[in-house]
Image (tube, rainbow, N blue to C red):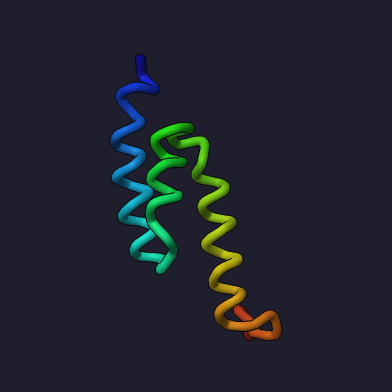
Length: 64
């Protein structure tokens, strides 16, 4: 029952977050509808890899 309530909310949330991150939104809407919040680690990893691909692998995030 809880999964049925969370699916539309997760779909909307993944749509907004994918648009903000510059990713394709439709696959993330479907992932949010099917598995709900369990797709969050996959989304975060995909977002990180897309950013790393855009900036290059030699880009340094932290410089003390």
